Image 1 (cartoon, rainbow, N blue to C red):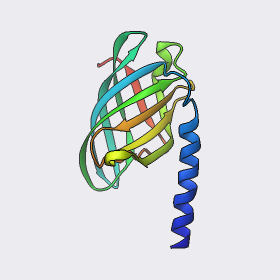
Image 2 (cartoon, rainbow, N blue to C red):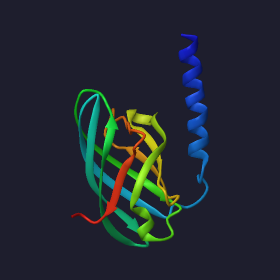
Image 3 (cartoon, rainbow, N blue to C red):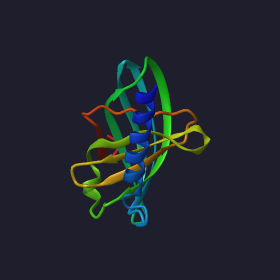
Image 4 (spheres, rainbow, N blue to C red):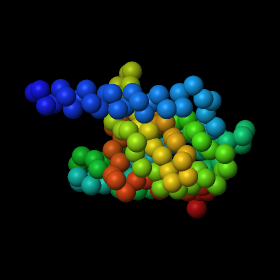
Length: 145
């Protein structure tokens, strides 16, 4: 029990520090996405969405491996994007800086960063949604095809 309490406390402190990053800066872009995952311990995640950058919408797709429980789920999420100066920097492999945060109303949140330094703060809009990403990350590419 004591070990669990210490782990939860450490995660809360690290998560708070991650969310504090860029909190007073205006986001460079906004995004909305929807997707699905199918899993039996290790699963596959796929989806698509729209990135709003400099007043224009740009479609994107995502795919990757997730570490989730057995089953299938549909997800809806929205987020803000930081450190995006060039549209092409949005595409890349995103790894989790922090995941699995519970937010008000039962949703969850994740902070992702790609190799170009672009940061996405993602908020699940589906009640009970948990983000679980593997160390290999999630691949995001501009375009639908």
